[in-house]
Length: 414
Image 1 (cartoon, one colour):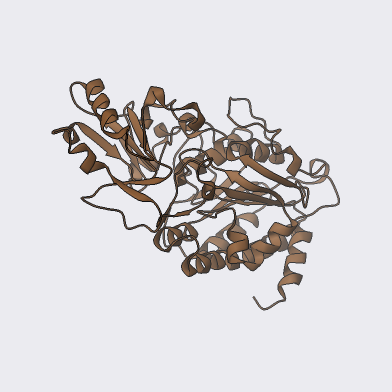
Image 2: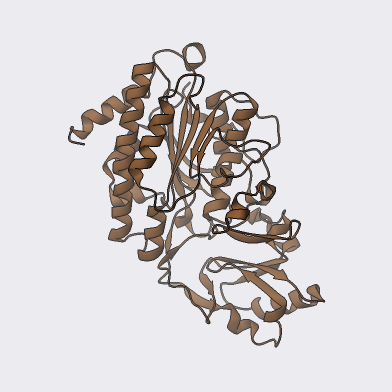
């Protein structure tokens, strides 16, 4: 793109604005973009040119707190359902659901596409129930039928999909005739998160990954707004993320297999899923409660480690109301849970408690006729994004959610 950036962005903002109220003149359209692992301070730290300009003009939550655990699938589902992970059922990137007798892992296609794992009503299902079309590009959960619906247009996940293919498809969807065009669209980028894991949040690789996404978004938004101008469409854009990223170099390792080895045979009666900030425990022996008590006795006095049976998990986590969480959890906000037999090589990670590890915070930026340019909220939880998006699209929520539409109201145009 060889045009002067400032002129491009001025055109972008013009395309995202309207002199007429959307409710009187035009259907609202909303694009939700997730940059996985986009920490709240990355714009200042890594200076992506388009996103820096977008932030200046946006309505913004400066520190958007993810739900616990601050992991990818749980928080992408929270964003599009308004539910905490304990209520939408995707309690981690990997877990066992004893009610279904099935495992859920990101790499397990038969689980990811199984709607039985998911509770709540994703925004695309809410839209479909009210005769509104939607399209998703790689959003977690969008490959399953949930609450009776799928998105009208969706793409199976491909980790190496070229950015240009994604951009071209979004533009193609937006160019459809009025009765076929999705009013709600999503787009997902993974690479910023991947480079944060492998090289750290402040690394050159994380910066380069963000700049690659930045260039793609610059092109996408320019092209979408050209379509909006040509066809007289209202377009709103939200850019956010699922969580931040923490460099791990200062965290002490807690090798869970070595701790459990102090109680002969215990490892064979326990299934542990997850490393890093939180591990789920599924007891499998004949006397589960006795074995859980032994686990608690082994771990409870280790510095910077907490262990709880599920019924005793502190309310501060809002993470105890689903059987898939397991029989107990081990967590640490100042250490790193690992296995000596196969230690993790990650440089950065997430999943920690946001109140204890502020690096887990992300942000939210909104531009378009629905948003009050320059509005700022210092901090908010991501459960409130769903009712705000429903309000922008004119959708009615009649089911129970954890989010509250009043919380993000200051971001919306008066």
